Image (cartoon, rainbow, N blue to C red):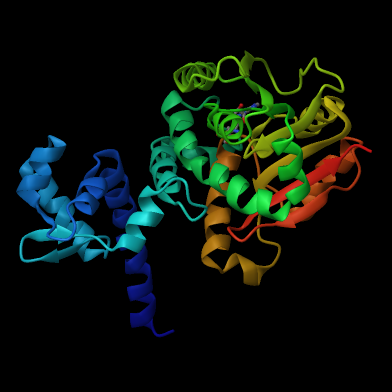
Length: 336
Ligand SMILES: C[S@@+](CC[C@H](N)C(=O)[O-])C[C@H]1O[C@@H](n2cnc3c(N)ncnc32)[C@H](O)[C@@H]1O
């Protein structure tokens, strides 16, 4: 690449930074949702500002930025948006949903003041604020879509088992949205969620109450290493969680003990790229960015072999590994 090309390439990353913030604002203020709803005639900046209860000059500037970075289209003074962009940013029931990733990336960066010092000291941040946990819930909406649309398609035996009912345990259940989705899709199941973060626990309890499924879903506040249900579950599940816990081997060992004969332990997570070539992909670059944030908070991701080794260390044996189209991976062990 020439010097000029390198300059343009780096400048494009700065545009990307502002683009990310434009997405964040567009989601948080409901701007994309309103622009999408205004199709086909579109909406003006003034109309958008009134609808969203925001300052006209700020929304006008946001709209010009969003147009400049190809998030919305401006024709004269009316804004519309491409339906494919709307799907990726807004439709959290799709495996390709990225809106939550944008929200959590921006919210994570609010804590990055201490990142430079962390690089020197190696001492991770002590605790993430509740805003981060709420943002993670937006992000893991994608994992739920991935589990249902890609994971169950790849694991028809698991889908059939859930259709037949059984007891399900979600370890580190966050705000409980996966439990609600499973209970809704598989009406014969009964479910337990375990969560240790007080704010996430409170959200999970509230969400289950609001869903009207309190009779079938129980939420318990406890760490994932402390699971007092030996041999009682047909499915024990970790979604985007095993990489986050302080002692993943102890967590897996405790979870495996809860699996009854014929039952399954399933981990859905995202692996680091294995090769330098894979690192240069859009997905690979995102994974290394996420890993930096993980290290900053004292946790970490692994590659396929690293995740599988946790199962071996926990005495479970080598898990089955299923790579999904979205880039997520399922690790699965079944008790015989
Ligand atoms: C990314 S969240 C995923 C939550 C949920 N499974 C979901 O999909 O929304 C990771 C979970 O790991 C757990 N966790 C986070 N940090 C932890 C820490 N430092 N020690 C132990 N567990 C932690 C929390 O229970 C948190 O809910």
